[in-house]
Image 1: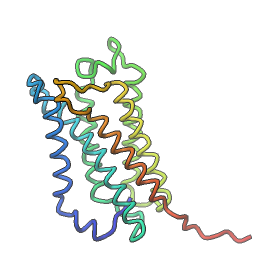
Image 2: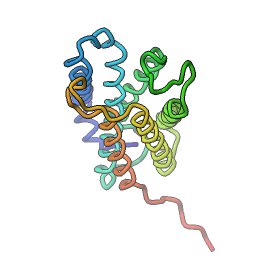
Image 3: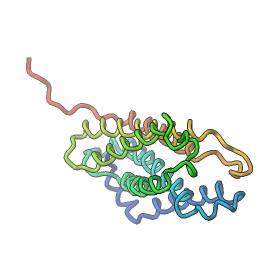
Image 4: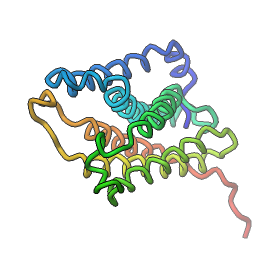
Length: 212
């Protein structure tokens, strides 16, 4: 995953990444706390975890958008973009926060008695595979074509992770949630757009032609 040098320089301040995560945090607080003040005690992990997860998904989508924009200018496949690194930050924060509250009292839809349901386990399966893909993408040794395929597999796992979360959690838009769309839906839309941008930026094979 790469971006033009001028885009990397433009975003080096870190302000765009900070503002995106700040917007996600505000959205999470409004949706889960504004009309349900009893959830304020769950702000440090449960609520902020949702902000970090949505922020990470949107960062990856924006990273693929920058990659698509920069394909015709510079696309050497070696330097992860600032948006990608920002997405890694959100993912790294999301994992331990999710594991810290993994119990039926927080995620009732994931459990039957004390054991996880099929869809609950699928959420964590695809989440783990997404994290593995992100790890591979942080390695600098991949060719452009290999990096593209790993990116495609990673965002596919992220899509499945988010979709399974939506299936488990449902579509709740009522006063308790400030009548706002669920955060998994926004993440899913962002992930879908990111996949489209990635497909549009598929690299042309640079392998030399085989002699007959």
